[in-house]
Length: 117
Image (cartoon, helix red, strand yellow):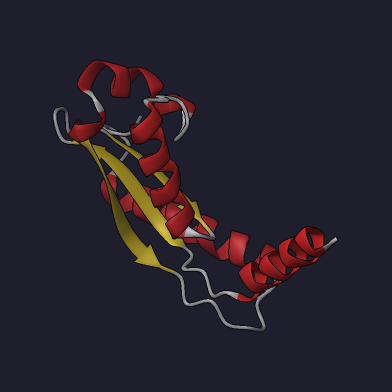
């Protein structure tokens, strides 16, 4: 029972933590191509990338990157945070997702899609 209680406390603590939301891209430095996306928890993207690299799971980050990562290796890729969203306590999850989508579209327009996976 104490394990269950501890787990619930940890989950509650995690939910109360402030997460950085924003737009990022994973860049292939060999080709200049990139994967552009957004997430409400940027740190989770770094964690997934590090985990994928550690266990050599090429599709753990995103399926569009699986083949390029197999071909060029993890060391040819890096994550760049392009812009963080200023999340206020009043914002709902839906509002955060909508704002992230707008930012992502603006960055896609700015960067163009020629080199996007």
